[in-house]
Length: 119
Image 1 (cartoon, one colour):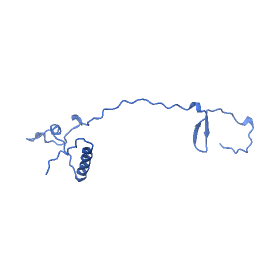
Image 2 (image 1 turned 90 degrees about the vertical axis):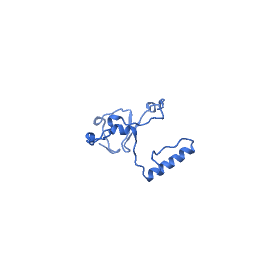
Image 3 (image 1 turned 180 degrees about the vertical axis):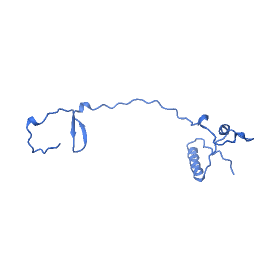
């Protein structure tokens, strides 16, 4: 409950509370009353992760939804996934890949292969 500063309150009508926090109700924030209680900044070293981590999908997550296992000439999807990686590159992908390879060559690095046969 807020009372105006001009309102007189007798000492018997209120309690005196001591708190370490200075409350600024109008701004909606709390500020430390003592600067000695501010925590000191600290730094810790973090171990660098190896830079070359290649993502590989585990074989147990590869599954085929078709029931073609009884047909002659059927190939297991797990065997196919080990032999090839398919991705249908569109014009935007090829443009991006060309830009990436140009940038890599400028840095003296080997380019990324699109793994597509040239037509």
